[in-house]
Length: 309
Image 1: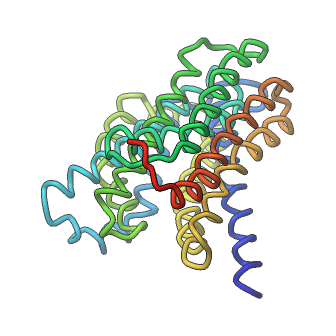
Image 2: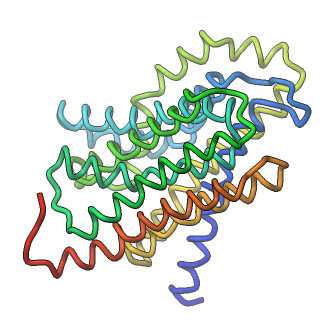
């Protein structure tokens, strides 16, 4: 099999895994009849603990790479912003909005990543990239307004939880790119998980995870989904992502950004969630902005003689 065919297979697998993570969160929390199994806090803490255990062999091998306080602090930021906080924010979000809609809102991530890079790390942007950010921002506003026709059981806090989570991802991505370039992807991931392991255990214990496992008859059912979410959605996805990067280009790998919200929306529809044409339209406006910023904007940036700071 050629590298090109392998790249497409890995890209599709990665999109399916990450796109399905939102429905797995909900399945870990509720039965098909809507009976609560685990709370959002319990699901998030379990996800962190299980993912850390799955990545523990890599963390043990890589532990010697933490050779300075600065590196530890940068890994702690990645652990908090790239893993810990989003886990709790996303599981809280799906208690009030559909998993498909949550997946759509996840498309904010590339916009925030670029903005954080520009504001904090002083990365230069072309005029076309600024235009793409503007288009994406319009899409973000439209997508949040489109939530008014969605069967939302929660309130605006569930929408903003996703916004904050994607902003955290933007921070994490920039720290990895600018401050941890000397570490490999699996090293960063395993060590950042290890750093947030004990807070996750403490929160899980305080939230009553042990009691739920002992007393809730549906706990084994919910735990299966959470284990899949943790191991497949984190450990396996990381392996696939690393392999994809090694055999393809960064531009091709970043295409997963466009497929995740589509997969999440389709899976949500399959499970009976309501997705409106306005939400879909707003999502494509965001993806258009991401495309302009990441593809067209970067090409134009290389050709422009005048840079905008």
